[in-house]
Structures are given as C-alpha cells and as structure tokens.
Image (cartoon, rainbow, N blue to C red; front, side, top):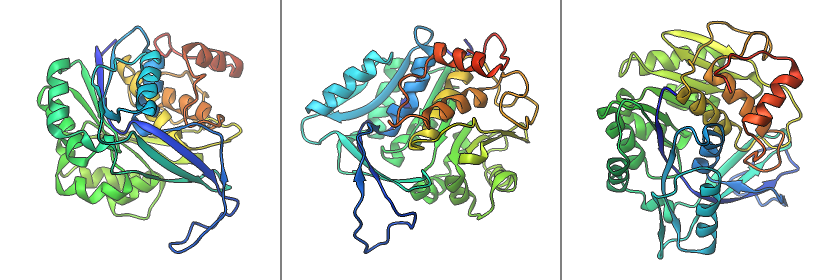
Length: 342
C-alpha cells in the first residue's frame, strides 16, 4: 500500500428519493406529483467511503469525521458504517440537532438533483473539530485526506489546508453552489486532486464547454494557483476524464442497465481513492475506445467499475460491490487486470 490511512469529512445522514415522470426540470413555483422510491439514499461521505472501505477492508483504516444526531437514525448509521469497515471514532452525536436528511429528485433520463438540510448535525463539523480529529489520528505523507460536500466550506477547506501542511495527499470535491466560495478562499493551492462532475467543472471553470476542452480550461485556470493539481472529472454516459502531469486521458464508461444514477459520481471517487491508496496512477497512458480494451491498471478505472455497478442498483450505495464481485465482473467480461488492481 502506498498510503496507510484515509481521513475524510462530509455529510453523514439518510435520504429520500423521489421519481419524476416528467423530464422537464422542476420549476421554481411548480407543484408536481412524484413517486416516493423505496430505494435507500445516503449522504455523500457515506457513499464515497463505502466503496473505499469495502475495497481496502483489513488493509488500511478509513476514518470518517462528522456529526449525526443523538437519534435512532444517527445511531443506526454509525453502526452501519462500522460494520462496513470504517473507524467511526470521530463521528459524534448531537443532542440538539437531528441527523442530516437529503432529498433527491430523479428525472426519467436518470439524471438527478439534490438538496440537503443545512440545519442538521453535519453543520456542527467546525474547522476546530476537523483539526482536532486530524491531530488525534495523525497526518503525514502517507495519509490521504478527502473533503466531501455537505459540511461547512470552512471545515473542508481546513481539512485540505491542514492536510497539505503535514504532507498528506489532499482531495477536494466542489459542488456547483459552492464553487465561488472555494475560489475566494484560494483553496486550490492546497489541493492535489480535484474531483468534480461535468456541471461542477463548468461552475469552477466559468465555462459552458464539455469534455476535453472543458477539462483543459479548468486545468489552465487552476494552474494559476497550483500547476501540479490533478483533476478527476466524471461526465455520466460520456465516461470520465483525468488531468495529470499536464496530460488528458478519457476513461470510457462501463456500459450497463442504468436504474439509478444517484451516487454514481461518489462511487467513482470512492473506488478511485481505494486505487490511489493501493498505489495506482491516475493515468494508464492510453485512451481506450471501450472500457477494458487494454489491461486495467489505473485508479480511475477502478472508480469507473464502482460507478458502473452503482448505477445498476436501486439504492444510492451498491452494497454488493467488493473485491470479490469486481473480480467476478472482470472475469465475466474477459478483461485483464494488473495484479495490484484488485
């Protein structure tokens, strides 16, 4: 293993998924009848770290840092994350604020929009709380720190800054609504890997472009702060792109029967984090035309498998994803993979 621990912060909580029968985006003053899905939905940190912990189980510790309410939902979530292989020591429970709840609306084309309660326990994750947890866990050059949405911007910025000062590999995810705030903080100088989807990349770059053009625009802009920054950009059905060492590479999507795209980008990041921890590179030095055309060896390819398996699952976490099921998928499709891949 290249790293010996992963520390993350982000939202921890439950969610509800509603299905719209209309493709038209919900209007500002519109009232629409939708279907409540029985699918289980979760907040972002849980989704990302499920895949990371599942693929690194018994290899290196994964530490979620956050808050839940002192309620039945919060206690159940902590136990769930513990059983998934995470060290839950640094998840606290608040008697004053409830566990975070997130609402997701999914359109017929499987695209989604989300909103999350801001007045919940996740808002208690202060910069001081983050720094204290990092100090107790210990951070050095063999640590990955990952700042995930749904906790305050200042707290995620502190995790990235403090991690960088200690020599850790720093990973940041930036939602559209917070792109300007992160820019004002000049936080990108402390970021090693920026993980964004298409819309988030457009918001950070102030661009309406797509694909490689957008990625290069984003890299040029952020290069003013940090010329060594790498980027992971997911683009739904178009696959994903990486920018590293001033080169762009496209990872084709894993084709399958998409049931629910909620959490696919988070699954990609979780799988990629596990790959990075194993010592995989961000690039395989080749642009495959279809997924698995050449030997699997990069962290984004592991992330793509997790995302591909995730969209075929009704829940926002595909709980069947594990080293064994990934090996089975590789064998089923006749792909080859380097020994360290999984």
